[in-house]
Amino acid sequence: MFKIFFFFFFKVVIYISSNFNLVKLQTTQFLYDTKMCDCENSEDVNRGKNRSFLVESNVSKSENIESKTEGNEISVDNAKKYKTRLYKRRWVIVSLFSSYSLCNAFQWIQYGIINNLFMEFYNVNSFAIDWMSMIYMLTYVPFIFPVTWLLDKKGLRIIALAATSINCVGAWIKVASVKPHLFWVTVLGQFACSLAQVFILGMPSRIASVWFGTGEVSTACLIGVFGNQLGIAIGFLVPPVLVPNVGDMDELAHHISVMFYITAGAATLIFILVLIMFQEKPDIPPSQAQVVMQNMAPQESSYRASVGRLLHNTPFVLLLITYGLNVGCFYAVSTLLNRMLINHYPGEEVNVGRIGLTIVIAGMVGSLICGIWLDKTKTYKQTTVAVYLLSFVGMVVYTFTLNLGHLWAVFITSAALGFFMTGYLPLGFEFAVELTYPESEGTSSGLLNCSAQVFGIIFTICQGKIIDYYGTLAGNIFLSVFLLLGTILTGMKNSSFVSLGICPLSIKNLDCN
Image 1 (cartoon, rainbow, N blue to C red):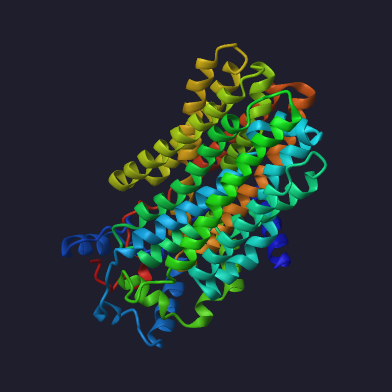
Image 2: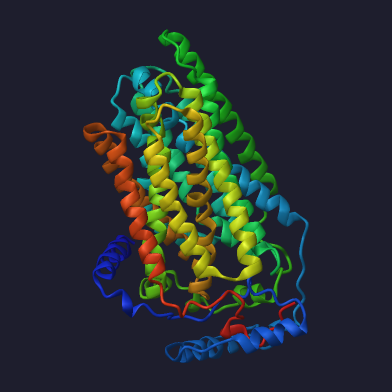
């Protein structure tokens, strides 16, 4: 597994140094099971077929996929004969996932948003508290590969139980760490929660495709991402309220203990609900595409081979880089928000939390609007470039208004930054699924998240050191430069990236209904 990890990094380095004019669309097997292939009547089917285009280098690949599938129990040609059904239970499944994703995401940021208070309580430096957030990113990188393999081999229920049980254990470990000399215990608890996160981040697209119909996949994926973002929002807002800046250490310990007990109780309740109610998959598939996917030959879904193919997919590698740059900047801003703002607004811990909440809430609205815009216009490349460019502009404006002494200005610029930066998240996931069909959604989203974690660690460490030595302004300019680079790389994507209405070649004979 670690060989794959190192191969990924070498691929990124080689690609950065290569000629970006060689970027070409290397796959046209777009995922049938998404809202972008919105063929709801025969007229739409014909239009979808007429709009299909062939890339010469992929014709043989498409034919190979079809020929392999014909030997299975259910072939591409006769999959349309099988019954499909949508269960009401699908909303329970995605809601449960959203809930435990929320609980885990809350714990990611609960230390960083009151960085100065935990520094005082545990008598450690700011860099040590920064690692309470960065440990989520560091843990993800080596563990995503075995966890993705486990997802493909064992399915959704095992992964959900692992995520909720480990998250629950981590929360209770932290309950036992509320002593100034037990910083190592709270690190252990945070490590457990960070391990649980690995079982969570790659799940939204898989749950959406396994449980939801063709017209609901984007909505289901959005709900899954929504839970994570809401958890971060609550993580910004609640800790400064539950743990006020008090001078007495015993009182501070009491407030920290209350926060940890509430978190552990919620994690325990969610684990019990998942244990009782979370189902692996519906008895009858929700779509004809799932009929085909669930009956593919084992060699077609080989995890190692899938990773290899993805890392040789040039457009996907470019997406890995640009996605990592954007989301890595978001992770750095989130982790260091307390340090940036307290330098300019001492004693405003509660307002720092509210600003963090503003960033995430604005981002959730941005995600929703971007999704609706894409569904209606299908202008994927233009939308992605625009959102990326506006993320850069938002970061620049935020950078130069931070030290003006007006909190209301920081609220406004933070909202603009969050709207565009967080709004980019679902765009990356949806485009990755499109570019990598018929590869596993878990594999592609896992690699995207891996890229984001790596860039997040690098940006957080570098910006933190820059803030220590040169100030907040220099640290934010550092992030702005990389957002500008990401904007340029996104704009350099080849115009061969087609609009999102094309039915996949490998299942082009299926009825889209």
